[in-house]
Amino acid sequence: MARGFGAGEARYARWSRSAPVRQPVEHRLAFRELGLAIGLEGVEWMGERAQPDDIVLGEGSEARALLRQLSDYLPVGERIVSFRLEEGNRLSQSWAQHEDINAVMLATALVPEGFLGLPSV
Image 1 (cartoon, helix red, strand yellow):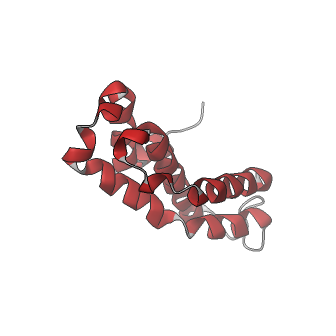
Image 2: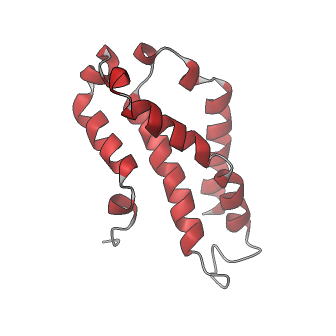
């Protein structure tokens, strides 16, 4: 699990250096950005639920340290959701081309516990 978090942090670092959120709205894929926002909500959700003696996410574990590092990026997810809530940013052609998945991803980003809190099957 720690390797997965580390890979996620490395991917985020590469993504953030390319500054896609500074690109014009027509050049951005909302569902991908919102996926990042949902993933960051997952980081917060896991951190809140981790017990100190948890084998994987307990205090002192590598995974817990990586969760803390990823938590530094939570404001990015909030900015993405705020941007996508602005009506003008949902009137673009890039939004309309993927409107179904964009709408589902925005709804999930707004109420992530509906997705993150589902029991595993």
